[in-house]
Amino acid sequence: MIGIELVLGAIIVAGFVALEVKKLRTSVISLAVAGLFFVIACFLFGSVEVGIGGIVAFGVLIPLLLWALKRTMGEDVTIRVRPAPNDIFVLLSAAVFMIAFLLVVFPLVGELSLSPPPPVEGPAGLSILRELVVLLAALAGVWAVIRKVGRRGE
Amino acid sequence: MTAVYVICAILFIVGIYGVVVKKNLIKIIIGISLMVQSVAVLLLSLGYAEGVGEGLFQTIGLITMIGGLGVMSLMIITAIRLYEKYGTFDVSEIRRLRG
Image (cartoon, rainbow over all chains, first blue to last red; front, side, top):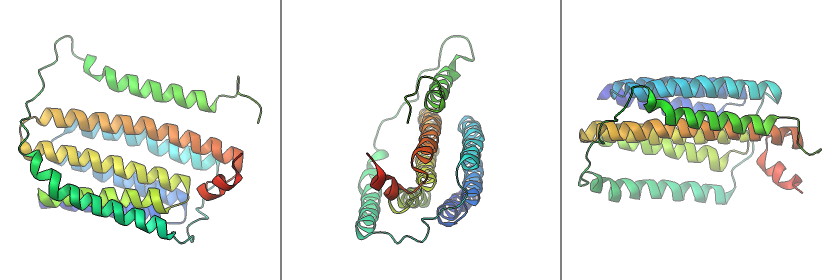
């Protein structure tokens, strides 16, 4: 399992680079690299369906982000802004919470009696319906936000 | 598998760092994306470690990914609309200019 840990470490590095670089296009490319490592991690875990879902998700998300940058600005002008003390406090609180979560909740997970769900009856192909509904709802929401007709003048 | 759990927690904290500290809307969206990835990897690793109910964890991980995609696409479009209205991605500037 050393390989999976290296891949997950690469996700962290790519994500941190995505957050720290000044050029937003480089940030999006770093996020794409993180997504690539995420998909590799899914395949290493033996979860082919989630890996394919990740390919679809990042295949939609990355072009959408690049399109958004094309319509707006390419640089992060706030990169030099120093974090406020309350931001650091929130970050430290989140870190403490995560450590407490790992120490307290995770030992209890093994004691849960988890049983696999029953197999889905019916014709094959219907199992992707829920993902399709979510994607169509997201597309409808995107269309509703960017449409010009019917919106009040600003 | 404990190391994988710790790495997932670190990835989640990196995502929180992006959401809390960064002022750029695109960076905030990237931070949320990292958090979604960490939760999905955590679910997959739980299923891998437990063995029992692996399909259940994979299903929840898949739903997490697809739901996260829907939320992030809406956030990107909202960021574009905010940029068209305020001319900036800086959340503190947007907060100052509201109303």
